[in-house]
Length: 388
Image (cartoon, rainbow, N blue to C red):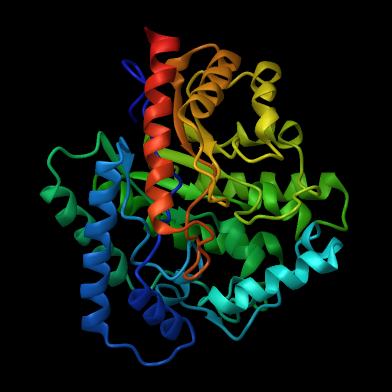
């Protein structure tokens, strides 16, 4: 895993906007309606080529395929694994549902845009196993093919995969005797994806919003200790699933939910950071640009980052069409680097993805690229201030 030895490197959290036609295909696929497979495969390749080219043009150092081959950042597993069917009924976001007028506004926006419903994903109704490696191999092949065309290329490339915890929390369990059994089965299945991604030469990013967001969703009415126990359970499962992968090939992305909302029920980073450090990974990626968590860089002064771990700091908010000024970006990078004590262990990133599920894209595409350019320019300013 690259470090910011000579300059502050930039990356992002993974998902980028999908073309409308591809999004419509994913919508039909998620509803189990017929889809022209050949047309979809070509659309995925074309979309991957576009987002890779745009990342490079915007100065992203560590880029990915934009998750163009997936309907969302986690429900796509229903097409690769056994055991899923029916429909979950996801608990409500405690912060959102505290404000009825905001609920009305948010629901209207989602009805107009969202094509894949994360609130009513399939549930586990049978044994979960990884059955079809074909889509994963095609996704890796497509990305490798596009990267070979890119001159100059990324400093490094990554691919994402969900944590067992977010699947367990959002694709509810009606088969296993306990949450522990369900999480263990998911970790065993996801091991296939984790190991394949790394074997193909990519960094693995594990997306684990569950390690923060579930505090105000599944655990909103329960004591904090219950949520922390859930987080420990998931981290232990992740560690088992990646036990054959060198830690410096894995980064862990943690966030409080990629939506514009009050977020005043979010768990404090202070409460979970020591537990996140138990993950056997080379980098921790944390949301630090949004108004609710921007101050939490101070936590790294009180809870020192483990010597073997780097930090990817969110310095761009993915829920607003404001384009951050490069000086603002630089300031965010500088203060977290000083809190950690070593700028070489810091990389600039985004708080979350720009289209985590098909249709849920609060930021216009042209502005996505402007934000990534602002991150590049801010990282250059921070480099001069921190590294000379």
